[in-house]
Length: 264
Image (cartoon, rainbow, N blue to C red; front, side, top):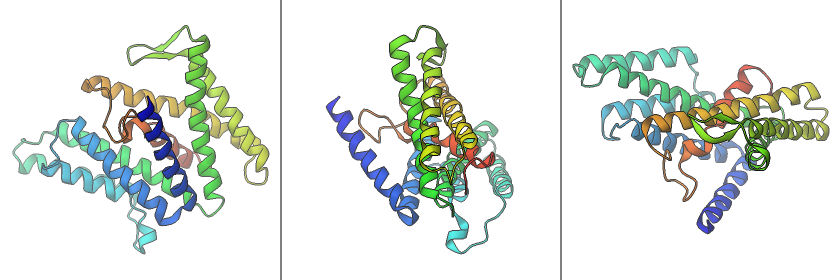
């Protein structure tokens, strides 16, 4: 427990500092998380990091993650990049005479999209011209509030299981407690920054952070259960890997951008 607390505090402090600094500092942090997260995903699917399929998957993930405009390059349409990665991966199934199966190619395409665009969305929000730091912190606080609210409410009054086949410890009461606390945190931000965020938008952000964030956690739990593993990796002692810690973020931030909820 002591090691878990120390590693959590140190990692949290580094994360907060780099997020506040923004720019290339935040980019370097997210690049690190993207690479480690995809390595975890590749290993979870039983593919060696030495295999060409792993190299292609990593390259595709980085193409979807990188902020091309910040490098002075024209950014291809996301759909074009996804299609090209699909084409390359499917071509590998032919070139290897089905040593790489279509199932394996599909899994790598899914991982590249899940991880690459998920972390790209975080960078995009933080680099937003209008209050990027505030909106990033608000989104993270709402996600963390949902986690904390779900945990403590579930411990206190949780009786009805939410989805026992996937995550046996989660309860419906805990889930609702997480939604309520995320909404309260979002409303606090609306009260503190009324010129940047209205009450209606704050409520919607709180709902997305709580509902989609909890679903993101269940998605990762379901996948780990299929693969028969407890943690996606061992990056932080007592906390698991990148995908264990960032599962909610990878779902919430893209949705916030797609629904145009954050004032970018």
